[in-house]
Amino acid sequence: MKLKKITLLLILTFICTISAYCESLSIMHWNIANAFDTIEEPKKNDTVLSPEEYNDKMSLTAGIIKKHMTDIITLCEVENINVLQDLATRCGYEYFYLIEGNDPRGIDVAIMSVYEMNYKSNKDMPTPYPGNPRYKFSRDCVTGQFQTPEGKNFCIVTTHLKSSFRDDGKSEMKRDAQVKGMLNVIENIYNTEKTEPYLIVTGDLNATRYSSPLQILEKAGLKILNYKEKQDDFYTYIYKKEKQDLDYIIVNQKLDKAMKRPKLQAIHDKMVSDVSDHYPIILKFDL
Image 1: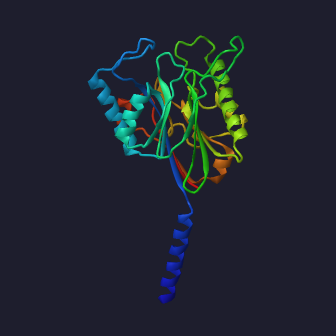
Image 2: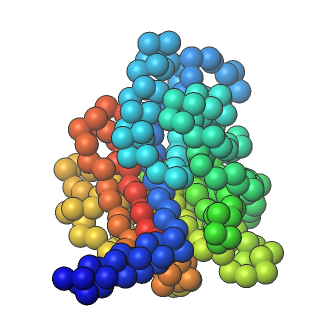
Image 3: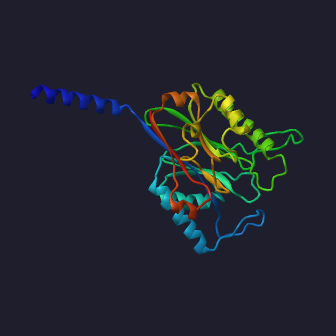
């Protein structure tokens, strides 16, 4: 009996020791759809919410985020830093980042985080396509670099690519150009870092599974985690009753190999539909 207790104690000690050196990280991505404020801005084609509409939007959004609280959340369609600050305060995030991008309606990409980040915009980077050498990201492609308490270097890249709304027949060509711009952003990160960071790419790519923009990312060696889940169970958008992915979580090979016990989840709560037509997705893992 004593021997069994000693063996059990040693096993528990070993597990605790291993856990002490194991870091966990969680990240959510969500297009929260038209998170506008109550102020009209003449230079933007923005939507102006009433105070009641704004408070309802923020309360519902914060409620869902807090229910599934992650270390980091990347967002699409946030109007400005004031809206983001309000949301971060409601959710309890210390750090929040947004730089005004290129969208004529004023909808931007943003990050909220428990980690302080070195946050950069690439809104002025050219993403040319035939016939338009001056084309740029529709909103932005931002980066957020940080280090975990154990000294592991991470980089988050998040974006919101060209929509097919009012398609001029060039939407996919434009998304392909912007995806190549994303790869240029990633290459710049690799060129400036002494060692390759763990990379997480998130965003509303406005592209379905296996389409041309996703193929470009795959050929570059990135791992599209959505593909590890069945489409019927894991989807971020429904179009004409068809389940689709428009939003993605993608990692580099270094992180794909290093992740332990990764868990990918799409949140299909009914409350989500009251906030957005996109479903949030979450990645959790140990390192």
